[in-house]
Length: 135
Image 1 (cartoon, rainbow, N blue to C red):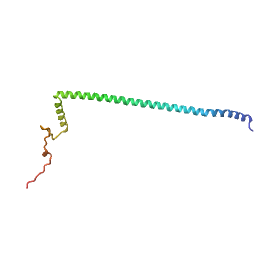
Image 2 (cartoon, helix red, strand yellow):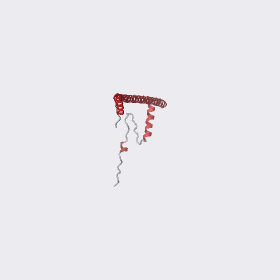
Image 3 (cartoon, one colour):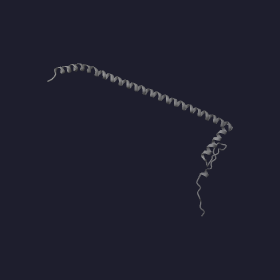
């Protein structure tokens, strides 16, 4: 036998829970979507902050590199001026640079400009010598 009181209680509880479920499920869905949206917003803000910090770091790095390059150039200019003055002016400094370049190149053949500014060449030295055998 079935207990009619139990069936009645189950019907009343079901009648009360059904409207509660019909109201609660959409509310929960809205709540979970709102939380997901807030999480996406927080992630986007965090990504934006990271991008800004990275851009600032690149800018600071570029400024520091530029300042270092300026300091290097100023030092090189002072050193060149000291060398130039100690060697008797720009002509002496250029002669010094030419000598330095020749020492680094281990040159075998040096062209010396003449009065007209043209190099003196020894073209015959560069041609391979052909050995002639006596008959």
